[in-house]
Length: 476
Image 1 (cartoon, rainbow, N blue to C red):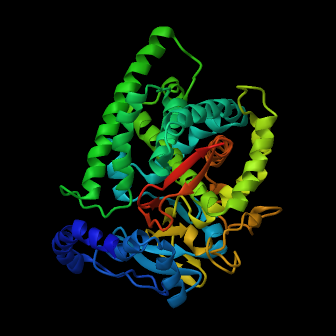
Image 2: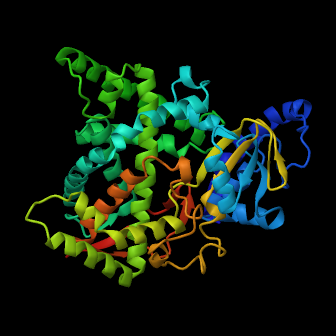
Image 3: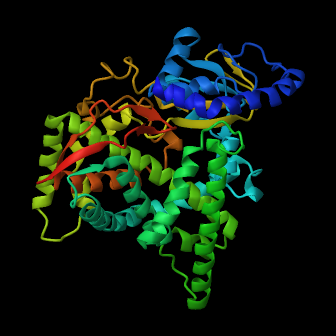
């Protein structure tokens, strides 16, 4: 109840202003789609639609309730809603996931909400198509994520995890896991993407990122005091800081005639991208790699505290690897391949506390799905919440059971924290390595207990422990 009151206190005035300012325009100019047999559902309030209902369900820590209430009432396959001011069809279940993942550029194309574009992208690029931006973003990932590159990152991840725990965990009897995991993953992204290693520089860079990500899925009301307004201001600060880094690196490359890239930033400069293009792309990389991974790490720590027997199995697996290493020897690719049970645990955590809710698309033609017409121009949404806790795909869905992922694992398109099929997140393997390397270092050095066992979880938009997951720690 306190979370709901806080939410209304902060946003009610802005929603009233928004409603008055655009409601009349909506009523005069809104036209119903000419398509027949639209998916069942409801649009909610003018302009706002059902965004408020979605946000409130997320704030309560039950984002899946928004989905399950509507699949029960309207259709288990696809239902209609309105989010972020857009007509939207929410595709449900493994069939819906598969359709959207495999229908890219045939039925649907990438689409980013205006709130994301305005908060993160340079004003000159806001009107670029989401397809164009998504294609560019993915085009720079394969070299960075090829196997030989990933193998090279493992020792870097390991050494940085050791340094992080030595500085941020060992001196204390208790810590807050969530802010520390964000600090670690952000520092790692700075090191690997743009070769920034100075702690003060990283801290200065991290603060506006936190404000920007908090506003990504907010209602786009750009008025002082709103989450969205703070995100827009933070995005501008980030771009200014990145531009300074980019220009310095450009001078260095030109003066030293560097032709072989050592990180993503150098690769983009050598390929001739502009400062604005590079800034937008690197911000996207940071958001995709840092925020979701830190959330996964946080909830792995949480679930391991809740299940000592599972912690013990992870500990035994990781200690076997630890004992095989020489003093000071860093982890390598072969070591990570042995962390099979640990990855089952991480996967079960991401099923129950998915770091990302899903993704949007835009229909590029009228098409039919499950007997309903999806009009051209409508937005579509796939979400983990139609399958991850659905008993049809995961029996006893609230039970924490890593064995679900042993052997052949879940049925295709039911476990989708990284998307699936041809639209699988290209950073999945990077995230897997980052998570497993941190798990190795943590469980071989510490045991811990929750200090607030009944801590509330809110989705903003990823799951967030509202007290930061405080734990008491003991060294092994």
